[in-house]
Length: 348
Ligand SMILES: Cc1cc2nc3c(=O)[nH]c(=O)nc-3n(C[C@H](O)[C@H](O)[C@H](O)COP(=O)(O)O)c2cc1C
Image 1 (cartoon, protein in one colour):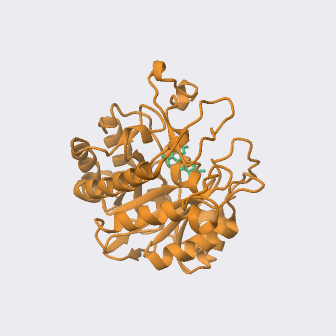
Image 2: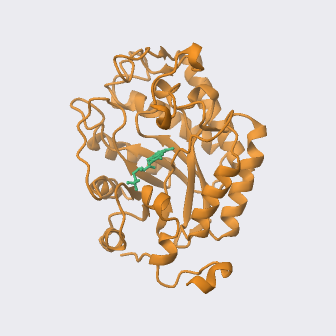
Image 3: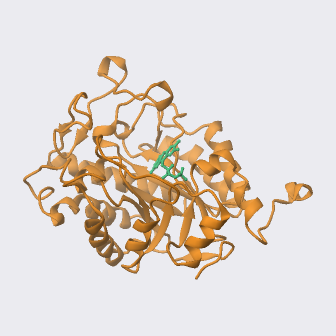
């Protein structure tokens, strides 16, 4: 049984409490470069006392961006601004993580604030890639099917992005295998109808994720945590489901993945999700049965909810998304005995 204020150590990294911030796209980058918005946004949450700050989905290649405004880590010039953010987060006693992502068929869209529709080439979009030529939404332009060389490039791009994350000083990487983006597209039989060794059986559909993890492990320090975010279910008949997720997580544990960030959905436009407070906690509980550590996320907004999760061993970390957007100081106000920044002591 863990307490909110209890540290958690994974490999050489200690998280000072059990609250983290999950990755949340800011759609505020130009050409993938982080800027002052990201510095202040992430820095504020670190000042606010979260133990782990996972920087938003950061594209390993330009065509892997959801929108033209996503962060990127496909070239060395992008490292410096990310390093500035990671350094500040660490100076506040928090841990800086980064989510490495490829959006696959869900790439080339406008930002949600501008309507989020698919962008054609003439509108500034680009050709998208996926396991199969099945669009996310039937009304959208279909993606191009990745061939073997294309799959190998994706693996190499994740490895290069991991090395850049290390250079930038991040202490955690999270591979984005959730929300209907490229890796999840491979996992789900509804988006992957390939007949080669990357499609069909469970073993084939999980192959890309396994190969990406193996590639990242060749450059990511063995003493730093490696996280994977998964959608535990497609919420759709015949899709990726909790049973397959649990089976996969047992394999990922053996491979040396340290923690599963348990989310759901995002791959099927017609999915019927059942959403309410803490709705994804049962996924974390089920995955944790494999012995791997988990983070839970999704409509968690109160200290009572967090305590209930920790006291009943339903997760090792609790991630607060929109609550930390509304209230970056939630951990400072909620966690007994937390160290306040000296600059703010008079406000305690
Ligand atoms: C503005 C916004 C951007 C998001 N961007 C990402 C992202 O980059 N990567 C990701 O895996 N999830 C993303 N998510 C999902 C969140 O990480 C989180 O799982 C979700 O918001 C549920 O948690 P909450 O109810 O505490 O907000 C985003 C959510 C929001 C609200």
